[in-house]
Image (cartoon, rainbow, N blue to C red; front, side, top):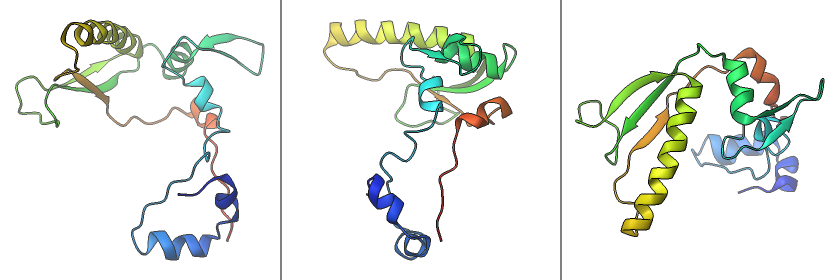
Amino acid sequence: MYDEEETAELDFKDFMVKHVTSYEPAVFLGLAKEWSALEKWNLSSDHVTTAEEGGEVASGWDYLNGAFGEDFLLEVITYMTNTWCEYFKYNRRDYETLSEFKEKSEKRKQRSKVYKTRNGNTGTQQKEVLVEQEVPLSLRDDIVEPTVTS
């Protein structure tokens, strides 16, 4: 595990020898903390972000909805078992807009709170996973490539 200081001092050759060739994972703390995506893509609340140009205000949901567009369909896997398998009865693959996904997500949070209160545990609950989506060009500026030294 590398903190910010150690990350800055890590030589590319040392990284290759210690981690890549030996298949040893590495964790870089704080590596993405400067990404504007962390603030702009925040879906956990109605946190409001201010655009650099024009001072417009939008939540993370609104920001992403604007970038993907209202017609863009997300591929969502829904399952109630420990692992995903398309042959299990309650597992399915759906396509929905970001607005539809947000609405389902908010309903699920409310149901989850009620279930936990009544039963005292989480039990087997429905899980949803977004299938890997291509990042729209308009969002790529929010992701900064880390500097690599050799």
